[in-house]
Image 1: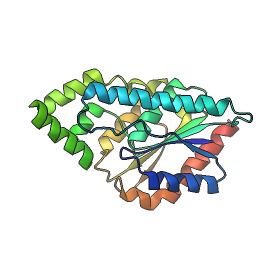
Image 2: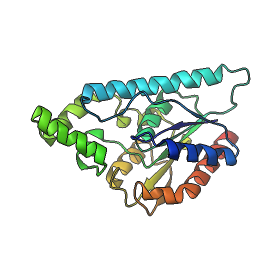
Image 3: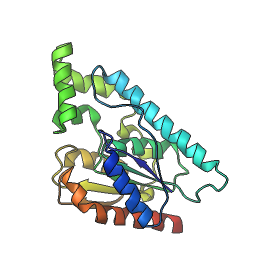
Length: 223
């Protein structure tokens, strides 16, 4: 069973495609409904962290339900994309019985990432904070750095490196390579696949990415 954790904007069509392709590769899939949108007014750092906490909690509730089924899955894995990979990092840290995780086009250092990411929604939120609260980027870095208790860097060290497959995008400007490397290093430099594409153009490599994830999950069940 693979639990899917979606991107910032939800990406229902993308997640349906990922789910169908994983089914074709022999896995059952599950997807937890989103708690709500992230990085949208009137959210500030405290509300964003609470949304993150609730998202992780809902994933854990779904995992508990799956494990209590009449025929529970023999192994459960997590695949998170973009912001979903950040959630999946925290989830894997607090759910040590998960058999493995694949983090796709994800990273860490949220406090700086919101300033440098090219993601339109992120930059719209940043401009809103500049205008609404009359604060600059230094304040946003401070606020997110002090209030985001669910920053992936705080949890990465609790995850066994062997459990992780990391997929990066060499030309990603939404989660730039430096932020990808930050999480990869914190995870202990796990197995890694880099695609020569950007954040959204990486969809062109969805087949090889999911092949790598499926092989990683199968290998984990043999360990």
